[in-house]
Length: 114
Image (cartoon, rainbow, N blue to C red):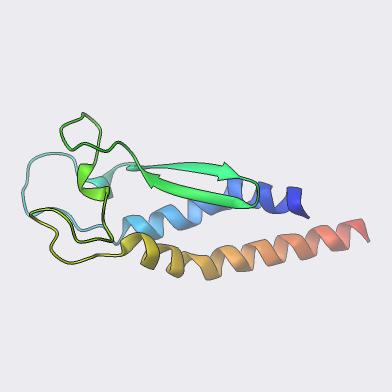
């Protein structure tokens, strides 16, 4: 089952969780530049029975970096006075769907084996 869960996380985890987080990222009032909620702002890393979604880059002055995503839950920076917690809220919103998919696929695998 461990192998099956790892496969499910790699196949479905990023596909389910990243969009839930992305839709919570606010677009800047400024018209210029590329905004994180309109591009692939993250990278997904997979371990044993885990998925981690991290913001790309770090420094706002690096090309392709979304520096304003570095401390989203802490309310840091001149334009982010309140902790947004969109990573946490997005994961919490997507988790039930990922759990249902995982449960259904594990049941299917068990029925296949039995």
